[in-house]
Image 1 (tube, rainbow, N blue to C red):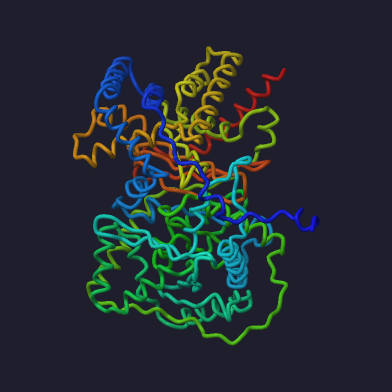
Image 2: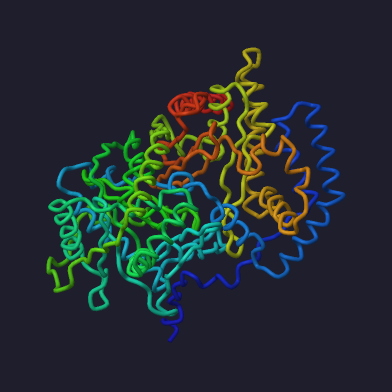
Length: 612
């Protein structure tokens, strides 16, 4: 008996959900003082004085009342922010989400087993799909270990949103449909959707309750590919998902009104595990330059991906892979976790299937054929045109900075993420001769249903350091001192944000209470410094550490004159994807990367001389 007791029971994926602490509400005083600190770098003396007065009035007047109401709300909800955030940050937004909200990225398999090669794509796709289905099974049986920060469990709710999940457009507001269930909860859809050349097919990923093997998946994928190559292109209904949300909602209602069968097809796509997109392009990439694949993932053919699906696995015809995902139901770390699992599994098996080649008897994939009329054709045509124009305006670069990585930075006893953030700040300052309001994602998953908080890296300390670096009269000592102050400030703000003590979501909550009660917008939010410092989604640099793995993603900039700046940190390199809008002549993604590289070298040099 003793022997059996010593065997630890494996933790279930969702076992800590009910014991996670509720999302805290910071004190009004601390949030407002942090806010003043954050706007300081963007203000003249006069402007700053005026904002200090505005903040004081808010704190003593309407802000106090709104804060009390927020505290009341927090008493009845374990996460006072959750619904509000989903609605305001994702579901109520009307711009096309496929380019503006989705995240996409390249798969890293070309760095080991799967370099670009002709005639390999379906074989490889059957293996990567099989591993993806294994991951679904781990979630379904709750055998995926719950993630932790040290010993503290992190919220795993978002992992329920990876499979069988889809956003559905509404005229005023979208909704999220989630059909996933764990085994203990009941049956879960098990079909996959495959898109190719404007056509849509589906097949069941289980046969007699068992996941199809790679040879079986290969047969299903080959059938789709062969039919699409031999027959005319499809209607490309999927392109509608790339449209402005209200227009897509109306086009969808129209499709349903033509033929009730169209509604059945939509349901089939929505409830499917995920979408496999068979893409005809060959976006040649290397471990040093992922630009083409990243662009293919973020801006590729709109007729072979369902933009609202939580996971589209893109199979390029040179045997490389990418993905595009709807951001509403989950944050990127969910996809990163799965893709890191896939990368390790594929590598461990040398990209091969070592099991049986037997292919069981099973139904061939079934084509999902929408009934389409003149109006629907014209909607599809308009969607394609809109998508083409906007994607052609997006500049994307995705390069490896190869001089050094985490190892060298940690040798200097510095935090690698903060190092990259400060290098980005300096690069922006050099390129644009002024500080840029900046957003870095902080994770709040220590709390029940926690997602993210804003961390604002453009601190007064960071700006002082940038100025010191640009000032020829400033000596190395003064520059180093300024750099260390900027590091300290950044590290503090980041840990506060992760503990639920940021201020952006708190202010956002106060703003929404005023809005819900039909009050006039408090002056705090109409003050020019509010948006100039990034408030209300106006950050010029939208950045995120995707992690310390091989998985990278990219997003479009938040504002027209801004940048998207996503990066992953490895021992010997840092891989960065930068986006900008071509129609903004002030910004240039490639220049920002070049300035970033030189900033990295200068910082390492500063850190090195400090050890003499």
